[in-house]
Length: 342
Image (tube, rainbow, N blue to C red; front, side):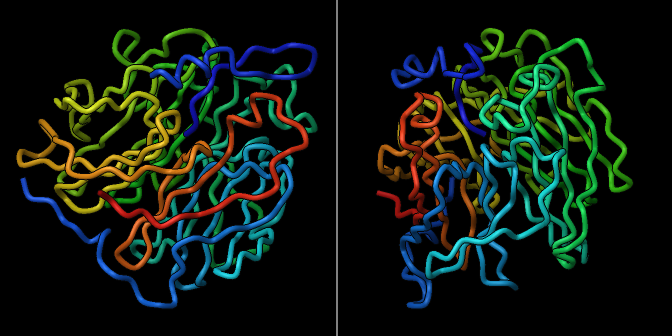
């Protein structure tokens, strides 16, 4: 769900457009309520060069699940900051990006978007770099089982690909955004993948290797909300008629939009990584339009995505700007931080 542009140089990938990105109703107040004392406000964990991207909270197991852009692994973070691998490593998991923990109807699965931005030099190859889109499906009740892999990029083999974020509807269909193309994929409960929405005009990235589509979330009224990073557009996509999608009207600058979280039916949280903000948007008309109802200023550590825990939201500080800026040594400390809106 991150925002950067890829330029390959001597086995290294750097963000050619990252610096440019830096320029770039009722409403619930649950996120400002006092939490139980047992839930920390900040969880710091240490793992050199991990560069996590996606985060979900697994309440039954009292852990945050985090992906890794550099290793492709999915790990767990406990409240004391202990990090460990949550599922078996798999060579098909080149870079693990957005994640969605689907506990509805006993499904108990973790869905993770898999891509190849070139950050993992052990698994990145010329054949997959900037061309890979997969969905990995883990059995959250069986930590030793290998994930099911669904190939997505092969549906449009002539396009660049970067599977970025995942949402799941009430029937168990998954939806995955592709940042390097103009596609949203649909994967049904039998793991059959199709192109759900394709629009070369409104959904295309601004340039080759640059980010367009990013965060995605399912709304229980039967539509998806989808963010486009480069221009800050927020789209409403009906499940029963995706080609009729419309842009949500808002005066809020959402450039570099990354992860989305639906706080309630009328409240959406949007992470902007380059702006170092989490915005809270409220609607009174089913996200035909939305207005700003709160802002959380993060540390300048490239926040990416959100997880919900006990009525509060937590944002992941991923430091991906340091990774793609070539900083050495690699960042070792990362954090998951409670969001408090002002």
